[in-house]
Image (cartoon, rainbow, N blue to C red):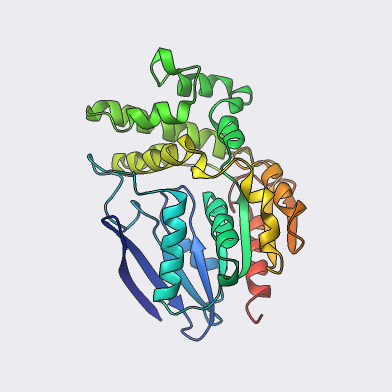
Length: 311
C-alpha cells in the first residue's frame, strides 16, 4: 500500500505526506529530525509493514513540502513548533486515524514529545532515540560549550559570524547570515553551520560520520536555515516545559534510547523525561553516539516498535 498527497495546512504551506504498509495495520507516524532533514525512506526499515500502517511526512519548508527553505526569499515566520504540532494533528484527522505510535529521533523527539503532551489521547506509544528537548541549555551546549570538546572546529564555527556577535547567541547570528541578501554570504554560513553539525554529531571510532557539509548547496541552506531558526528560539517552548509536564504522558508507554557517547543529545534530556513519566523506559547504550548508526541502537528501535505492533 502506498498513498501520498499534499496537505494544505494554511499560511501558504503544503505538507507532503505518504502512507506505507498494511492499510488495516497499527497506525504509526514518523517524526523526522533536523528540523529540515525530511522523512527519508530508511525510516520504514524500523517497521514490519505487514503489521503497521506507517505515515511519513515532511515538516514545513523541507523535503517535498512547499515552500522550500532552500529558496532565496523563503519566509519562516509560520514555521514554529506550535505550527508543526497543529500540522501533525490535522494530518491524523485527515487520514482518519484515532491513535498512532509516534517514532522520532533528535529534533523529532522534541516535536514528538511536545505533540504527545498537547494531544495525549492521540498517541498510543512513543519510541524515541537520540532524545532532545531543544532547551536553551541544550542549544548553548551545542553552539558554545561543545567547543570544550572540539576547540579548533568550534573556533572556526564561531568565527563564521561577525566579530561583534561572537560572544552572544550564535544561533540567531547564523540565522541572520543565512537570510543575507548576498548569496555568497548565505552559502558560506550554510557550509560553516553544516560543518559544525557534522563535527558534533560524529563520534569517530563508532562508525558514525555525518555528511551534511558534502550535500548540495540547496540542501545545506535549507537545513542550516531551519535548524538555526529553531535553535534561535529554543523551539518556542518554555524552558524545561517538556520534562516539567511529562506527567501528561501518564498511561502512554514510552521507550527512550540514547547513546552514552552522544555529544549532540546528552543523556540528561531523556533521563529528565523519565522522572515525571511513569510509563517511560530509558535504555542507555554505552558505546553508541548520535542516531541509530550502531547496530545496538538500530536493533533496539526495531524491537521496541515490534513489541507494540499487536497492542
